[in-house]
Image 1 (cartoon, rainbow, N blue to C red):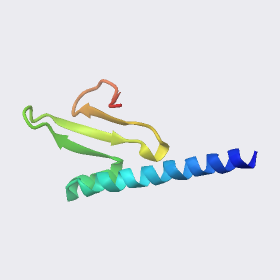
Image 2: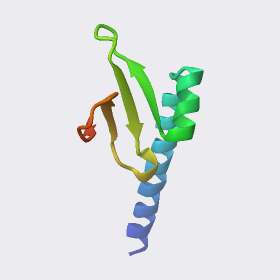
Image 3: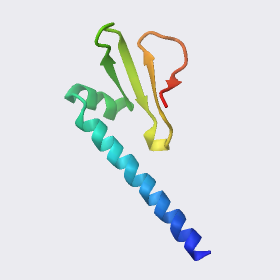
Image 4: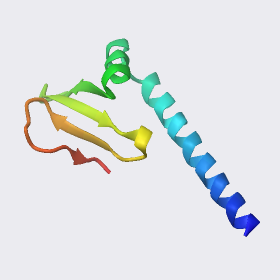
Length: 82
């Protein structure tokens, strides 16, 4: 029983560490404006290279859920990327 508890704790610690690291990596690659928007809203905007379409990238990583995207102006629900 103790071994199972230790294993569960270890797995939870690894998940938390992975979430922290993934957010660090994301923030390292955002522009200062995108970082500010992300900190305020938990989303940021990107512009498609060829289409110049603006996309809002949302992350619910704090809750352990997937990242979603939507085109600006779309009324359709956000679709999971993964």
